[in-house]
Length: 184
Image 1 (tube, helix red, strand yellow):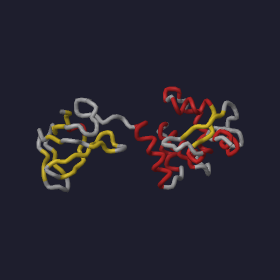
Image 2 (tube, one colour):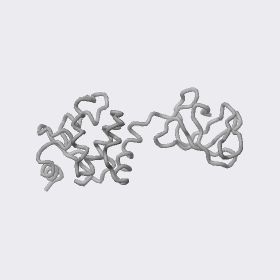
Image 3 (cartoon, one colour):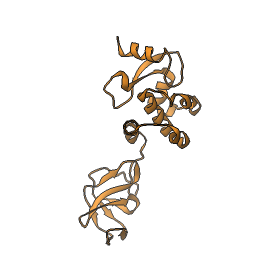
Image 4 (spheres, helix red, strand yellow):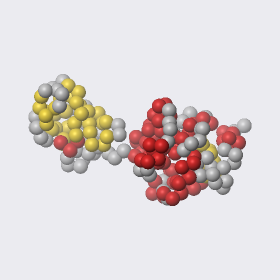
């Protein structure tokens, strides 16, 4: 049997998110190996809104209040991602995910939802860039001050925190707020 046939059987011929019975297809929840455990059966309306953020209709996604309790991990992961996209913290707090399920859900969100990290001039920073400190900063817990003009090479972005970077100053790995940095 094919993946789509297996998904239709599992879902009783309805969208696993909104219960629609029209225009159903298989949808791989990335990152995915293409197995049934990492795929969901969804309708064309859900698929279009998942793939194109500009076409999101918040009212359509009230259906997630039911589907978030699915026994299928891929369905819960997709519900979590949609609640995140909708910035619905109340439902995010209610959904139950095992640690591995939450890690999978957040893997898809990091690239999708995170604002780019920007320096004090609103220039986008990327991993590996070099920056300069624009103001003396007291480094809590390290006992030194990162002086204005200090260069921080080969920075790392902090996942989920678009206003922070990690870098080494005086041989110590620290987190710096990007608003006090300028890209070199």
